[in-house]
Amino acid sequence: MVMETIDFRTLSPQDKYKYLSSSVTPRPIALVSTVDGARNVNLSPFSFFNVFSANPPILVFSPLRSIRTNETKHTLDNVHEVREAVVNLVSHDMVEQTSLSSGSYERDVDEFAKSGFTAQASELVTPPRVKEAPVSFECEVKEVVALGNEGGSGNLVICEVKMMHVQKRILKDGLPDPFLLDTVARLGGDWYCRASGDSLFEVEKPIGKSGLGVDSMPESVRNSDVLSGNDLGKLGGIERFPSKLDQKDFLKEYVYAVEEIMNLAEAGKRLRKLHTWAKELIAERKIQEAWSILLWADTLGE
Ligand SMILES: Cc1cc2nc3c(=O)[nH]c(=O)nc-3n(C[C@H](O)[C@H](O)[C@H](O)COP(=O)(O)O)c2cc1C
Image (cartoon, rainbow, N blue to C red; front, side, top):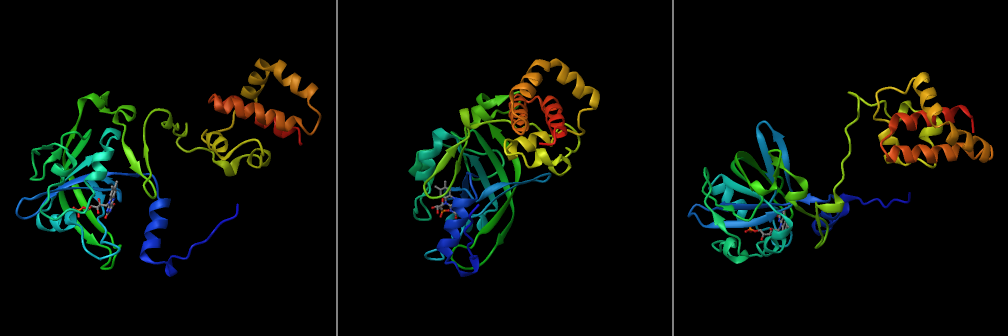
């Protein structure tokens, strides 16, 4: 793989921002409502955002100082004045209005009005929540950590969740369902992505407490030019290799396919054929069966 190496010590603040924000993707979006000391409401999106602790339940977002002017964001000024925030999540049907709310309006301008979102009174905190949001978290701001004083410097707004509101329509077995939540995330430039439909997939946890790992696999498997990194990841998730007995049982069941490969394929090409077969079994999540083939192929010494 040909790599380009970028030395951050020599970059302008703009370039640091560009490289980071177009690489660390996709980033979830917090649509944050806050109030200033005079109770003027502010609503702005932040994609430098995530969850960092379950107990205490902590969300963190980061309003940067303007790279151009070094000015602070109104959201940051607000949380210094009133240590409360509502973090609303953004579904696909909210994305254009969310973008509209990011305009640089004057401090006393309420972006709920500008974006057309509906302000709904919160239960515990002063800033209202966004009625259209699938999930909203009412938070107390525990701490604000300034990461610098220059343009582009972030400010970690550390929020403790006190109450969560979730639209019932997105719940399945009591939890937000990824297909119904339909959240969007931010990438580089003007790009967003949507967590829904075909883009969702499951990755099973390793079967045992700890998988055997790639380092304990035979070299013919580790260095296979048929198996991908994802295949090795799935193969490494089992706790132990199938026993000789299991292998025999499996190969007996597939005896015709095994014989066909042994008879038809030229020596030197059998390993490849067997690995291709194992790959198909891996795709069907038949990991023990795939291992039976791979371990047997390993004994061919090709
Ligand atoms: C989807 C999205 C994500 C954003 N993420 C951030 C962010 O993480 N940090 C930041 O400082 N600005 C971010 N911005 C820009 C701010 O939303 C924008 O500067 C906004 O005007 C700040 O409003 P305020 O000054 O009223 O707080 C983002 C904009 C959009 C549209």
